[in-house]
Structure formats: structure tokens, C-alpha cells
Image (cartoon, rainbow, N blue to C red; front, side):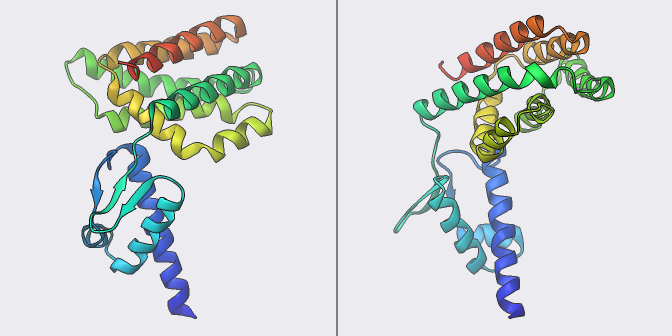
Length: 216
């Protein structure tokens, strides 16, 4: 009984870590995944890794080909178009209530994080796109998590993985991180004023700007 439980836990651990690496872009679309290499990196046997890969394949993250192995399926242009549409609709609706529920302290904390990235860009430094996409994700999650509509939060949660993949690809495609950070700082500045019309305007402008990079 204990061996079965441990096996299940290891499989879940492998599943979560591999999935997180895919969503964060550390494992890129098209990458071939080696069971033995993953098992070594994760410090476990190949069996739980194999089970994790099968689960990820059943969810559409991977494709397993006999004689080749498992590889990460890229998001199609249609996938990204659909994800942008749902992201835009949900965030624009969410801010109608979250704008009044996000605290000044939360805005302060987020501003400090973005300002640090902006200052680094000013010094000629370039943040890792995975690091920046995590920060980007945190801000947009904040806009959704504080809304009063549980269905919006549920839809975002159920599409969390692919939305994160979309956001990571958007961050990777950016050729101007500094401008993106500036736009995020503008969103936070307007959020602090609780001006819904202005926030709607700057958020939509930012979402359209980010989405355009994936069309190039």
C-alpha cells in the first residue's frame, strides 16, 4: 500500500514539475523529452516519469510518437487567437469589480517589482523571459483574483496552464521588455486612481500590443 502511494506521489510530482517547466517555457515547444534524462533531473525512476508524460499527453501538452519519444506540442495560431480572446474578455470584465478590491499595498508591492525590472533595463540588463512572464502573470492574476465573479476565476483557473503558456510565448516574442514594463507600470498607476474607464483603456491597449507580437 505504501509503495503504491509513493508511486502515485512521485508521478504527481513529476507531472507538476514537467508541466510547470512547459508553461514557463523552460521546456520549449518541439523539445523531445527523454524519460531517462527527466528521471535523472527529478531524482526518481523512469516509471513515474513515464506516467506523468502519459498524463500530459492525454491533456494535449505532449505528443508521444513510437520510436521518437514525447515532444511538447506547440500552441497553434488558432489556439493563441482563442486564448487571447478569452484572456481579454475575462480580464476586462474582472477589473469592473477588482479595481475596488485590490489594496494600495498590493499595488505598491507590484510597482516595486516592475520598477526593479525597468531600472535593470535602464542599466542595459535584460531579464530572463521566464522571470518576466512570471511577473506579468502575477499582475494579471491579481486583476482576476480580486474580482467578485467566481465564474471568471473558475474559467481562468481551468485554463491556467495554457494561459500561462500563451503569456510566456508573448513575453518571449517581445522585442521591447522595457516598453512592456512601462505599460504595466501605467496600468498600476491608473489602478491606484480607481478610474475604471481609464483602466479599461490602458489595459486593452496593453493586451492588444502584447498580442500583436505573436502575429509577427
